[in-house]
Image (cartoon, rainbow, N blue to C red; front, side, top):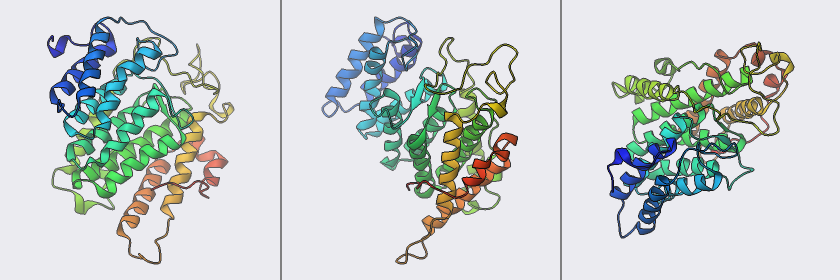
Length: 351
C-alpha cells in the first residue's frame, strides 16, 4: 500500500478520505473489525479509479450520489464500532470534509436515509464513549458542520445536535470539555441567528469570546487555562471553515425562496430587500431553536427531586444562550413579531 500522503486517488475528497481510511485500517482490531477493514480497503481501491466529476445532485464534491454513499460508508461503520482508535480518525475525516465544504445538502428528519443525516447522527451518538478526546472531537465536528455554508442542519436534527452539546456541557469528562461545549453552543447560536438575520448561508461570522461566557457562571469549572484552550478550539474551527469552497458546489435549498446573490443585489445574500423576503428555511430553524431554548429555560424540577442541579445548570445555560442571541440580534430579528411570540414556547426541547 502506498504512503498515506498518496492514498485516495486524484479526487479532492479522496485526498481527504484516503489517509483517514488508512489510519482506520492500522488502528482497527483485525479480528473484531474484519468487515470494517475490508470496507476501507475496498473504498481505497475505488478512490484510485475515480476522478472529480461534479454532480449537482451529489452530497460529496466530485463524486456521483452512489459513489458518495459507498465512500462514506467506512466512516459510518467506524463510528458505529464505539472503538475509540477507529472513531477518532473517522471524526477527524468528517471534520475536514465539513470544513473544506466538500459535503453539501440539507440534514433533516424527513430524509433519515440520506448520507448526511446518517453521518450527523452517527457523530452525535459517539459522544457518549466517555473519553475526553472523543468529546472534544465530536464538538469540533458538529461546530464545523453548522459553520459550513454548504450544510443546512434543520428542525429536529438541529435540536438533536444542540442537545448533544448540552449533554457534554452537563456531564462532560472535565471542566475544560464543559466550557468547550458551552462555547460551541454559543458559537452555534451566533451562526444560526446571523444567517437568520441575513436570510443567507453565506455570511460573515463573529467569533464568540469565551471569557465573556464565564462572567456569570461556570467559573468553578475553569481549570486554570481552560479559557485559553477553549478560545483556541473555537478559533481553529471557525478559521478552518474559511477555506474557499469548491466552485459550482453551492447549497440549493429545495422548496425555498432563497436564491444566490444577483448582480447589484444587497449584501444580505439574496436579490431582494430583507423586509420582502418573508420566511425561509433558515429563519424557520432560527425561530424553532429560539422557542426551544425558551421552553428549556422554564423547565421545572419534579416533586421527587426538587434540588436537581443538572436541571438548574441546563436552565441557566439556556438563559445565557438566549442572551447571546438577543445581544447579537439585528433589526430584522428584533422587529419580527414572531420573535415575541416565540417567547411562548410551543415545542418541547428533548433533554
